[in-house]
View 1 (cartoon, rainbow, N blue to C red):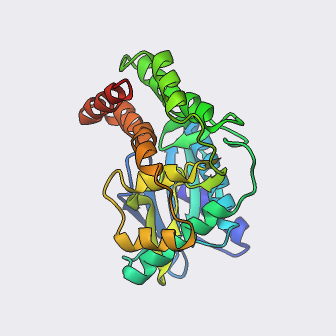
View 2 (cartoon, one colour; view 1 turned 90 degrees about the vertical axis):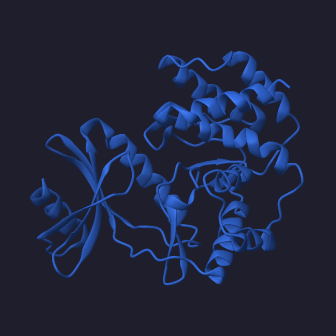
Length: 286
């Protein structure tokens, strides 16, 4: 496998590369990750089962679109494909460091600028993709309340139901979410889609993002995610607000937007996430 991947890297970078140092890195539950080197150059490689190539293709698309904004340091995609029974994705290896107050402020500014780069009138994306290993439906829609209720909450509840986890009446929840977001017509922003600290970092003090679940939607969904699994440092929010402050309605919509990610974790891990999802779903009707 590694000989073949080395050949593909060589072809892509137009110079010889033969990896002689392969080190597995713990980098999540959805795939295996490695740092490979020939003593001069290093690359970050993800591998998975053969049928997961579509996940890597979707990640590649998301990274390419975010990189075009030139606001973040984004891992350059080197190559991807199939070898024997595996799929693989080779990325530029980036040394990640912790951020200080100034770099987190810059991160917030960069995200606000990406969100304000208005290039799309509708909500969704040209193709379905994934959030982690979970399929993410992105059918284009003109109305945000319908898109989020159907393509996010309803779709995730359906996946849970198919797994034998029936949390609520899907049609009822979808209608509740539509009503709660009725009248909210946000700008369609370019979104990371899975913005928690595990998908961020810094390189030479410039913000780095990776592992996107890319689509166009309400910028508040990215911000809501930053508050779900350990809130980002306060300087991040100060930086964001310096470019594009959030309005008061965000605090009412935030639990609905976070519900999507809680449902995804309930699907992947069960346990406490199922209980947490039940509490939020119950509050929708109160």
